[in-house]
Length: 92
Image 1 (spheres, helix red, strand yellow):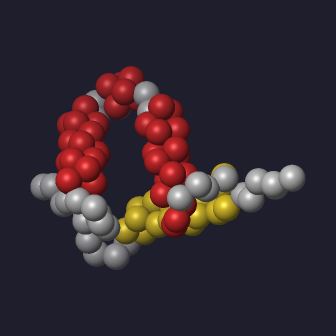
Image 2: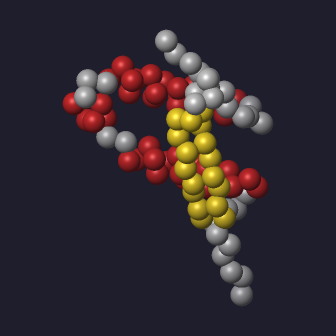
């Protein structure tokens, strides 16, 4: 009988100055190397938890739009390249 192995992946995101913006950890059963399937599932889970209304009530729609554009651009690059280690796109 095969047992499921739970894998954990820790991640961080820093701004262009090296300041920590986000850190986290995901765990689950990985089916591909470097837990890339778990990363996709974590992204989907996080996207499903975002409520645009929070940006509306705090009058931060430009931030919402900027972040959404960054996600779209990153997805385009991931789809285009066989190997991709994302870059931070800094918007003014």
